[in-house]
Image (cartoon, rainbow over all chains, first blue to last red):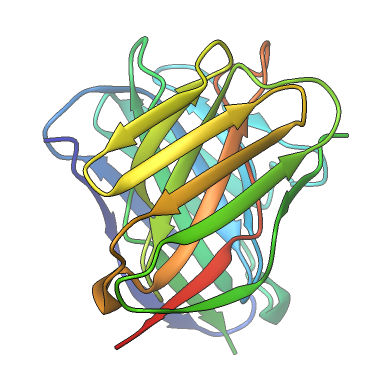
Length: 115
Length: 113
């Protein structure tokens, strides 16, 4: 149990376009989902925390108008990178957490390349 | 701000030996600490969680210790195998952080056959 999927696994887009990444908890309900970004050889950096049905909480330095997060149901959260630029190229990883639990279950990640 | 350091960027050991990875943190103690394994191009996979009032946790060939005085956690893999080669991340959750995790930069372990 506790499987999290992400789609797409890899995306290449042109500068200025928007990209949507989906994160799904397949076999449990996730009251909280987290979005991380990871640059090569670096740690996971938390971007935002989202709770189902409420607005996401963004970490300092993360532009909420650029990284739109929607947590519309207990099994789905989406991250939309708007007007993407080459510096947004990174590995984006989501995680999901069951209500009251401490463990986060991570998705396989999405490699975004902005040309 | 909280700072997490993992002992070395890379660690090579011989198959069958015990690998020991270190995670040091600054400032106040976390509510709990977790260890994850991450393979290239993949998301992290949860391995073990240890709480601030626990000294040691074991799971099969894995052992984690937590010393709040030294502000340090050690992660051991006994009887290591080439399949254990991966990057290992420690992550801390601080009290009052709404269950958010702060990750270390990871240690890349290579087990040589």
